[in-house]
Length: 72
Image (cartoon, rainbow, N blue to C red; front, side):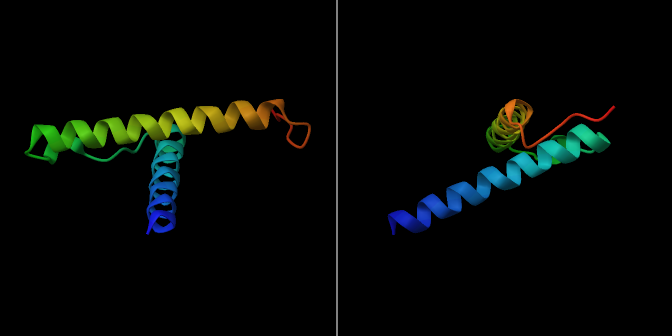
């Protein structure tokens, strides 16, 4: 049971980071304004902000690694 919860949590974090990547590259973001319940809307906003944090963290880790290089 605990392993399944960890797995689902990790999947949720990956989806959130994926959505953050889409937002960064295309400026497309979920239309949270269409959600009528403000508590659910705030929860989803926090979820997406967590994805932004994870995405930034992954960029820092990859930037410090010798396995990746920046191309301009």
